[in-house]
Length: 367
Image 1 (cartoon, rainbow, N blue to C red):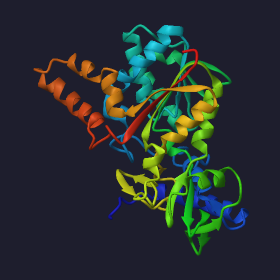
Image 2 (image 1 turned 90 degrees about the horizontal axis):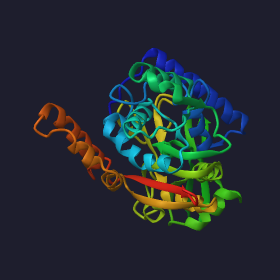
Image 3 (image 1 turned 30 degrees about the vertical axis):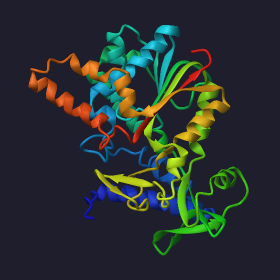
Image 4 (image 1 turned 90 degrees about the vertical axis):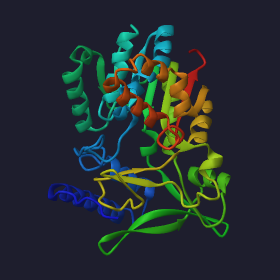
């Protein structure tokens, strides 16, 4: 595959991150878990993919998310959010707001529905993305900026709605290898000037317990996320009344660990190319894994959250009225209607995002 070459500045940035990861490996005795590698590659302060200043979203970035495809995505998502706010008020907390496009579309639609949150809180670890989000509101909707508050950590408690679009897939995962009745963790070492894979026997603990429950087969490599259930449990303890909505690509557990998916789901995104090498240009590419939605729902029930709905993105958007919003545009006005219709097709089509992406809605006992 012929990949775009990075600029000298971007290459220097990646090399700095490589040195940091190498130092971490050396200080850890020559081996780190892949979860630790992924955490550094994506979130190392000043160097990680999400912490630095490269363009990530849209045509000039590495991938395109649903809010970038169409404003109808955010407008549709606003419908169930408005129902929660109408019922009891409160705030919206978005985890990892990306370019800020979803926040902008949500708030604009909530203005139309006359159901604004007290605050729109954004938990964003990247200073660069915070700046981009702020600039977007300053340019597009300065009258809404006073409602937007940026956070460094989860608040102690929240009434209202939590939203996370394509967040869970970017949380660090452990790589687990089942072979000859044994369980190994695949981690990262350094050989010469390159990162290499190294397997180690897995000690007892939370990860091994999860791996022993699965046992998907022999010569089977896949991911287990401890970060995803930990985040769900934290949100369940924080959310006192309301709903949490997670949108991401993934499967239920029985499909995730299917016998034919014996090399896992790990995927990287660089300048709109998909590749399976997480060691390629660290800091300049996204690293993701599909979400085990069974772990999301199981973790929710541990902290007294109820699963209100779980469906494909296509079904969720249709149920929430995306076709009604599209129908508000006169179909005879081709210049206005056709681009929106094409956008909706991308969001709903099984060949695009409609089936691979799932939506899980979790609600408190007191909605």
